[in-house]
Image (cartoon, rainbow, N blue to C red; front, top):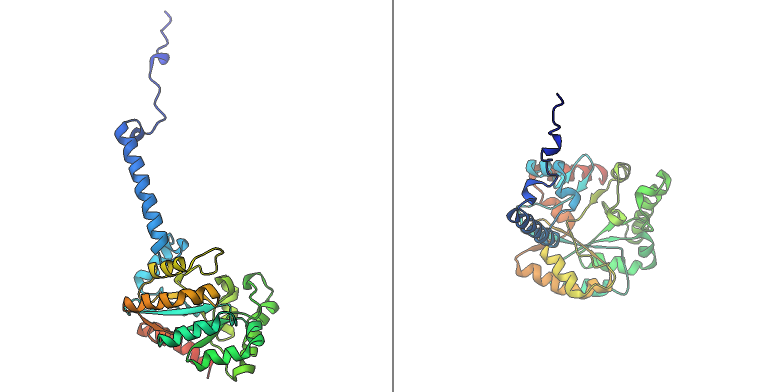
Length: 288
């Protein structure tokens, strides 16, 4: 006798996840997504590390071990001492006659100093601004000769971008630079090795003001900078007119919060003992 086919009577399993099969479950998912969205907006406004670092377990392991400030194998400064209430103001892309005098006047008025990462061709065009920067007690680091992205260059082109700016600086001042910030903060292992061979500590940043973005306002630059600041922050600014206008409010905000503003060289001297020794030993070896 033929058996009846009961397969059609069996209920097919639902493809809808159980949590979405009820009104309570669906509401819970919506609430969770809203909260996650609010967290992402808040974190983006206040974060002091990049998204890549945020989701990088190696970064968090280094941070747990206290090795996220200075990496000696790459001569790479990522952050100042987290235990000290101090920050560093850094200014890229200058010197520019339209903005640098105002920036220097503001620094002088607040009795603080900054670190300027200058471009070689700009230094050659305005040697008086280079001398003025140093005369005010600030320091100057290398930001390449013509602001090209270093990872895209051949070894010889990279050598000229790194070295020619220092030649220009030396002709103006009789001194050499020992700090370097790659244009666009773009680098790879080959770039870092080249910079080490030239005796440079590569300086990153933790707090980008985005003062270079088109259409930004002074209040945006000030708020973004102050929202992201923390102990040991390396603040990225630029030698631009918009920055010059925002700088007084930035410094006033930092000082109201009790931050001491120091140069990058000072920040290196204030690293925890082991990392300070490693950085100072590298500089001593390459800048006797």
